[in-house]
Picture 1 (spheres, rainbow, N blue to C red):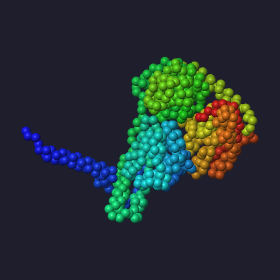
Picture 2 (picture 1 turned 60 degrees about the horizontal axis):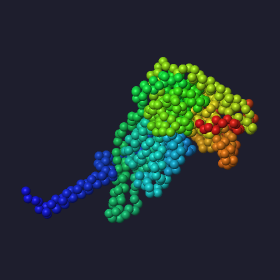
Picture 3 (picture 1 turned 90 degrees about the vertical axis):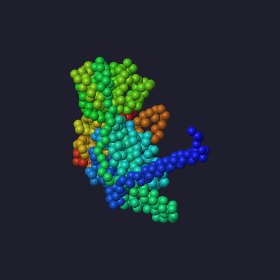
Length: 617
């Protein structure tokens, strides 16, 4: 019952402090051992004699995921990836600009339903891809970008082409990772590929420091210190470098699962689908607006519903070129009359005047994988009756099944189609008008559309000329019109025998004309139609009347056909004197492509008053 002696209390306190300190010290030691890889190395050996390298791990995962193409512009940082992919049968397509490589990967993703893959070198190689990666993000394309980087111990120390690449891509990509050891490659690439396809599809980025890709015997030479400090410090430095090297390769070649991880695709609930079935079944004037998401699974059930459809993004062509329910013109007027609007992957952004074109009395069903896009501007200009975060394509299939036997009243799509016919007759009449100089661009586009094969793919990149093409050229089938997507999309010719047309403005052609060298080297036949009016006309149309100057809008009537010849293709110059032979020249270009040659039609065009031509696709 007596109190403890004061000295005993002090000793007890000291013991507690010492115990805590020892625990902290032990924790620090264990954490340090973990960070240095000492614990991992106790159970996993480093095979110092192995000639294998990290690029082989990348290639194994890509092959297991069905990747057939890797687009690149070569660089020493990424050479092991390229060589390993070639060895396992993945076709490596080298372009003349890194942005083109990523645009091409984006195109393959859209056309094949798989993840598009690109690899570029460190520093400026990666910075050159930023626009293309942002394009893939906005297009919701599943894309894997792999980039080289300075060695793991040299990052941030001024190594060659060493920049903070992760900060650059985090705002653009769903997932970013920097490989720190070779054993991380397989699980990281698998995870990235799954994330790219899950939820809202989009780009992902993996950074590969150069010492994670090359074999041990080469990397080890870079870790040797020529004149290490003497004494204890020298021993510590040598030990640290050797341990880092051993940890880099520890367990590198152990067998790992390379198969695809599950992909998470959000789906509408049965209750949500049922509510939509009830709304659609009561509608007298329904309209469907389809966006790119609607093409992700097969969606061939729209004809059964008989509901008039406006197609945008990669959904253009889904209904073929002559479907009775595909409405191409007068969308604003149709939306004012509609009593129900189904936004299937379509976003209320500038293309729908931020939602202001929607009739406030209409029932609105919106479905989108991305919650932000689903409700964009709904706080201001429109309100969804039902908003569903889910996959648009699968939803349409389920909706059609639930409405089996039901069809939209036929007079509604017939009325809208009649408006199409009237508008297109007017456009055709404008095509027959003579321009002051050169050829009428509308006549050129009508001629191309009439001669284009039924299995053609259309790639469009431009402003004024391409805007006109959007109103005239008719995509032949699903996923056959792509805007702002690299012309290297033509690589799809190697897995489906399609004719590929590229519609260029003369301004946009300047970005990628060097890729005719790529077409020639990779034996990729294309037909490019260039609307050459020696001007950035889409800008000039507004700049001149508003500001009174054409400054920076003027170009030259450049001999793009000669440039094409220089890259090994076949170029044609077409002017007003060739108007009567226009069809014959186009047919000759088609014959050239069938023989494996890339062709370019440099068409000198005049100005028109076709105001829709100022609208970009």
